[in-house]
Length: 444
Image 1 (cartoon, one colour):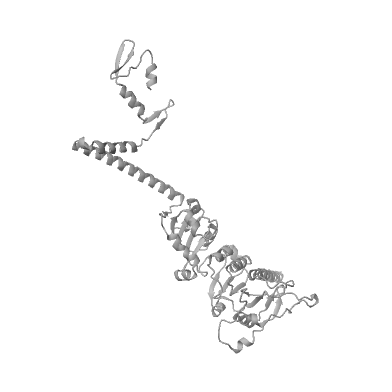
Image 2: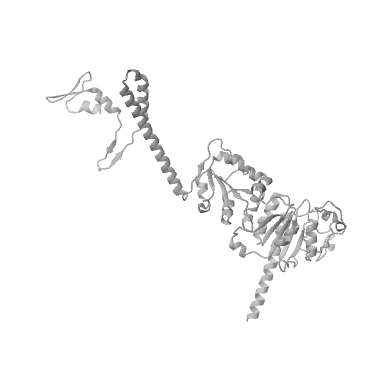
């Protein structure tokens, strides 16, 4: 601006106490300090040739700092009225900044609520240990049973739980995008807490957490709403897990049971907790696709089975003999020593332990699933319990085995379960198809 005025026409600027600008014969006295002050000012608005207007918002931070500095330096020389005026101005500008900041925060919160369907969440402050406390839910079976809570991690598992009607209590997430991936309409009653991803990585069991962890009330299988498509494809096949202690095996067995269309899964008290984190990861949401009843006594198991059910037990220790000519055929297997089935939950000796239940062996691919059928899978460490063998004997069940090549000790319990369950499903579907054909032939 000064350069422009210096070169306009024949005028010139002479800086001094009273500078002059001469244009023609007219003389205008101008104070040079005004030009310098004008160069330091910021524009309030900019007008463009097309009529558009651009407004600038000035920041009063520098002015407030300057006022406070002047007030401290020259406060002694100011009158009482000047001091009061400066104090009021500084307070007024500070209040305006607070109000503008509050308005911006409210606007941001309103925008976030619109993105989350009206849901509110809180940000965990520094040093908040709520995530650390709830992580004990995943690690302690006693705490889970006492508090009636379970921990679910990952978008897919949480979505399956919400779809089945499980009740969420608290949900931790690291980013709003992770929260938007969940069904927001089913999180109205849950407490939402935003935490740092570093904190979630510290307390997560996964190497790469997905950024969302939820605490649910312990689901009751009798009250969950399972997917209708899965239930329509189910067959009258029931799975009993007897002393399955390995978490990975149990989770795989549950996943296989859901894939084979089992009606339900019953777990005895000797099994690992079905809500262990490792079981949940291996099951891949099977807990919310078919009913799973954990921690049952053998007296209670009969209450969850039909009256006309036949109970078969899985024998995963059978193999071919060295002589191919003497390979087991229908109804013949290599005898298993009675020591494998001599363990009982009772410490007292009785006459029943001396004579084991007589359960006839049978090759797995022969007909054994012709009506409501239950299959007992024993753990790899202890095998089948005496109660399982007695139940199979009472219902005229069979000891099913999968022939194996020589030198193989036994099948993994999860592998044996998958072979027998899908074979049972195949036989039940064939029986159902024959029944439909007979019904059609009678109609025509």
